[in-house]
Image (cartoon, rainbow, N blue to C red; front, side):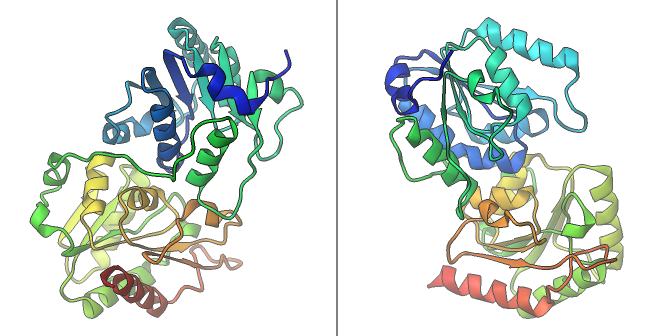
Length: 349
């Protein structure tokens, strides 16, 4: 069956009673989905709205109370089995969705979309065009190639091409106060500390350990009025690296969270910090979501501009992966401190 005109998709489906947004992304993907998800919520105010994300980040969706139901799909620490995929298809078909929207375009999410049984299925053409049969998996599709702008703009523009009323991307999230209290931090502490995420998913995206110790000392020297809060993911790798880092520090930071907070609680800690420091990792996106100022160090990924926001409160320093080096290079501690001073100055003015 030939796909219909995408510009008429929303007009044709505006009476939908049950809608699924199937993304299956990790934390960064899901944070960048939120403005588009809000557009869908506003477009179908009467509909029961579902979203499917990676199972390991479902707790993060507690920030989004205007969703009717959140589905988890196994992606980490292992991929979904063939049986689990069949079970997912069966669950989707039982729900009898009027509309399914997939702005991800990955092979797995596209197959699940096609087999879902949804009467209308909107997709965004994958960046590589997808396999020859990809377009037949959707009843309508849009072409919206990446540009030098954050991914959340891309997703909103994709919906606009399908006739959805466009709004400037907004992160409509709610983080109850108890999430901050779970970290033994009060609202009175807001702005008195820096939050630091030392680690990413791989060493080559991280600053060398010795430089990181130097960097923390420089923060304390240049910003003596600020306390330091460090956190890491609840993985064996990052917890081990956190213990090794703490052993190198002359004194323990004000707060250390070695994977013992959930994503909503970490978002609350970041939201109340004066400045967030990190590499190319998920907490960067939580900072963007909560509009927290950021200084980040990135590896030379050609698509890095798509994952960071534009604006005076954000600074990203791109380093280099030199031959034989285990960690990120060519980022000086002085440059990081200068970036922090610049961001804080722009926030105050």
